[in-house]
Image (tube, rainbow, N blue to C red; front, side):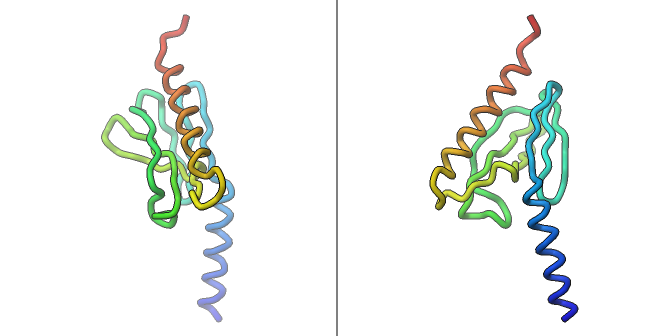
Length: 112
């Protein structure tokens, strides 16, 4: 019974955190709230974005946008995770990556 209650609590917490995953684009960078942690990346820390298979709990069925950092690290964006088995899933992830690339390009241009 105790194990069942623990599993239920973990499941509710996991689903709750998944529902609130987000990527918030700001003038100075982007806030990433993933299932297990929240981080802020300044535009100067970001080298680019790519679409990759989901990692961990999403692999191998999902696709997600990955932030490629200038220090060589890569960070998945849980808010962009889509399962390609559903209609338009892959296209949604590609579109999210395209929009983030535009934001990065705009942020790296000197103000006029």
